[in-house]
Image (tube, rainbow, N blue to C red):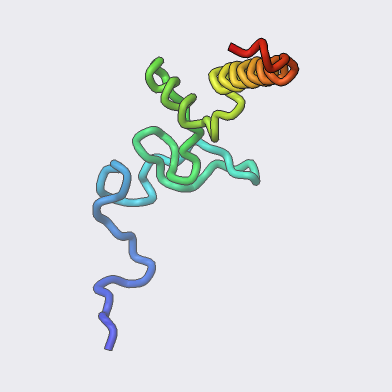
Length: 115
């Protein structure tokens, strides 16, 4: 059959708690400082940062120049509209325009003028 519990159902349990809280009574652990949607304080035990696992808070984002650059590069989806891509498209357009002008000049020139 199933295992029998060594304690009564509503007995206070003692032992190690999660997230850095000291061992002992779970109900004595520091509480999360967040407010719920009802406006009441959260009843979850707090982690080391003072918040529970549900109300940990938003990320503060990268702090260093290296981290900011890494996020900037990671957020680029394809780069088709970047400054470098636009400059390359512009130069290709100019090159194609020059090629068309040259071909038109060669087509209009008399046969004797070609060198």
